[in-house]
Length: 465
Image (cartoon, rainbow, N blue to C red; front, side, top):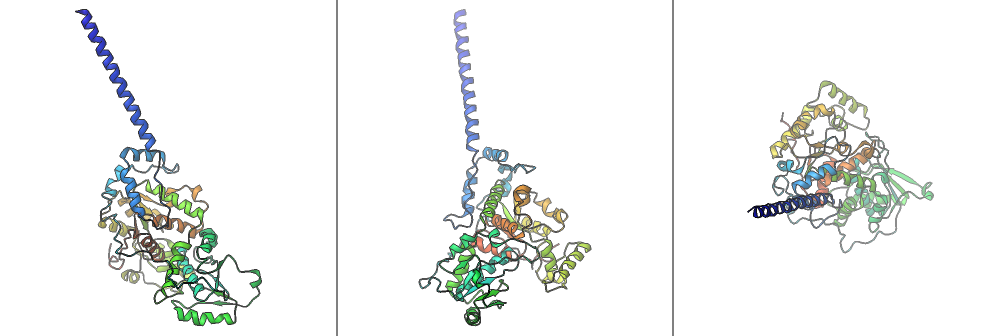
């Protein structure tokens, strides 16, 4: 009897030992697989290239395949070292994500519209040049971008050799950046080789030839450039355009000229490699928070001073903006009625109104938002309402360290270019004001595949709060 009992005890002991080993091995293997699979971050599609599948669809598919455990490990492994807090694990952002096919995030239908930039069958290479066109651009980054594209078309119309345009260094921002600091100069020249001859600088032998500085008439068509401007080649070898913005009409131009403007804007004007690299890194870091909104919050000092929009500001702040406007010589309008501006819809939404707008649309409070803007006037004091409703407010200054941003700091155009890239790649783009950047980003997103943009109507929203 004792032997039987002893044998039963031995069998039971062996069984328990084997069970413990199996459980231990299973646990070790599961931990190993989890760490290995989460150590890779998703690749970001190359920006600005028209994909067969939209960037949003690619990112949605990637994120939908990642489990909660993987997303938690991302928070631990890839949080930029300078951030005080890691991104929230994505399962905590379920409210922001919801169903990515919902109206909040789903891109609009293309309605059978697609990019049409290839030249027609009768389009020819540029002929022998009649002379050189110098261009002095004016305004901020996106105003200069639009002007450069217009001047590419003008150079084609008047059969000129285009010298790489000079960026505005005398505007409010006092940015000393050259063309090659902001844009990929070699790519710009090569991409337009079949359209316009572009050179980096005026040949030395042209320094002493007859030149003329000309203010091209605003919104001019083919007749003006083929007639009045082209006739100047009889007397001058170099024509300098004093300004570049709004010099070419938007409508009633030959299709090939319109297509050339698009090629210049969306294919030739590519940002400098270091800006593209930094912008891509910002997008990758923003993606760690999940699908995000890029909010172009136009609430900087220069914009408020120029427009005279002082709603929600203190008397001291309104006086400061008025003084800036009066002392800026090239701003023509000095006396502005802020209430009248706002009643006509000429003012941006204030941060509080933006928060109300997003809430009304249905975006939950844990929606990640990238603030695409310069320094917000008044700082945190004017961001309280937006920050309290949407606490995951990020910016390039929060996503990158001071050391990483140092090469771009004090260069407004380069900093704006970083915001442009993050805005282009966002799941949803929302501008608080329909200015140059808002229109440029919306158009570029439409060109890249009808990415979702929501533009509030500031006229009907002007009576709010």
